[in-house]
Image (cartoon, rainbow, N blue to C red; front, side):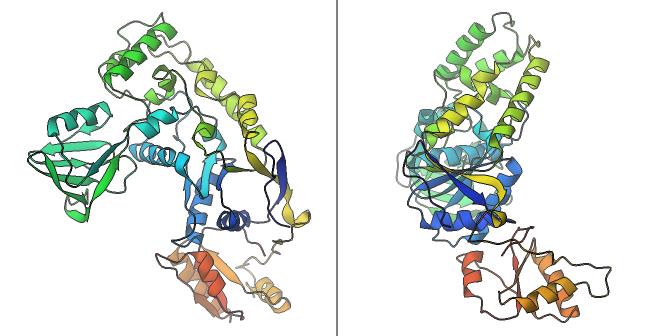
Length: 440
């Protein structure tokens, strides 16, 4: 069967769930053939991260991009903030979503149930710098501070900047490397990336973009709106509340992410960032997972609601109620994997793999594998989670009289192209790919 989306947005296609972990292959092929962005909503953060790693390993450099909206990896209402690297990836991903034309964006259900900062804030508060551009270091320092960047002596992490005479260092959110700006008078003479460990420059670049350092504004207007909303929402909280005091001074108080609605008139959500042409793919049991998440949210709220120094917002202000979330899904063309194994429900693209596991205590530990291989003409590829494990498997096959070869990819070639180039013979190919459940 072909995996096709319905033509009308109010309809939903039902796809058999491929056996093993063939869902990654199915999604990869779907993205290559689709002319639209595909947003995949997964059951958990772990599934999202695993799919992203697998899909990126499969793709060639020219294939459609694969990315994810990272989860904050905090519990609801936690009083500490996500790691800077997580915030960096989130802001970079969200800022690029509205312009996405093709490719896969992955998100865990619990992440998708959060309300996001408005699209206008994430996408409209960036600073573009180019070689030859005029730049006043004093006003630039003020801009960075209001954007949430921290002034330090030496830049090591995302969200930091340093000024030393005519040299300005910054580690922009969403960037893989920090950037060194060399000024001649008030003009950018050179832009170079540098290694934060050695502080040595690496490559020369012509331009780069600075995204906000946080998902909320610490500008004068942003702080004023927060204080007004805070006092209105929590009239019994004393003015001396550390959260209120720090935010009023422009300090990024730990856990401020759970007060996003106090910075904005209207909040966004995942669907406000997705292009209208986006197709959705939904994994099974999302309804049950959403209800379980909301139980946790309510429990956490009840536990923390009585702290007068650090009051918490109502759950519906920070998270999407399940009925609102599932209603929003219906505005997109979508498909849902059934909870039933596709091998048992007429899936013609994939089949279930028999039990050919290694049995180390047996006289012939690979007997099941050998017997199965003699009965079918298919090429056999074994996935290892690391190069070291691939070497161990190669030795195991050799010791048991099986021909094997470890195959490697390069920067431009993904695993999928490697698989297509393999000859159809009896040699077992070993590749590095994080699949733990096989399929045919």
